Image (cartoon, rainbow, N blue to C red; front, side, top):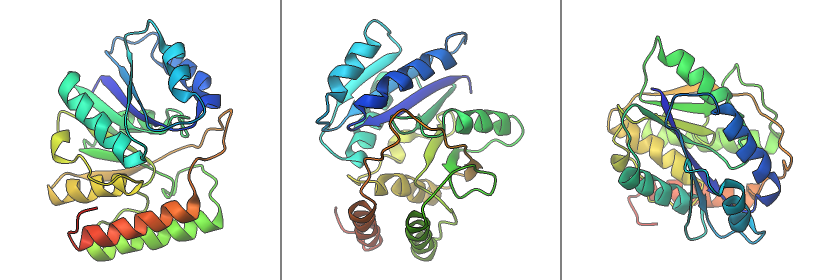
Length: 240
């Protein structure tokens, strides 16, 4: 895998966008790859859309589109766009956040590991024993409950489905794993679908990087409640 395609949902992260764009440009300034960076703005109210357009103007590697509000909607819109508009050959799709919370630690570990142990999908996991992250007790407890339910309901033996997701597009047909969820459950849904299709998923360690604006746009209680709700509905095969 030599080409990186970043899919980055964007919601109210105007203050950290300049740092993100600079990091992406610096990381890939001397590579021979044909990397792409797709930002999917989904309902921001802080000028994020206008700012990302300004920061990336004139650089053909950057693509900016809009979707309705919702993390899962942004993921679904972005995956469809990539499937229809980008060359997927010899490429790695990286689903990450707009402030690059793990820097490129997940990508670097994935590429190093893949040389000796090819896998279909890698998850940048905050729960991996080698990860260097700080998580509140509340987040840890809620995450443990959620992932325990994933194991009970779907046999998904993963410790963290809410990190980053790195998909080998030579091995995985992304059209098969596009989620229906509109919320943060979408990454767990990708894992459930991929597992059912027989794709191999492996968790890898990450290192949390401090950004200019480390304030999360996630509401830990309401977003977690929505994820638990969608998990139950998915189990019952109900439409969202």
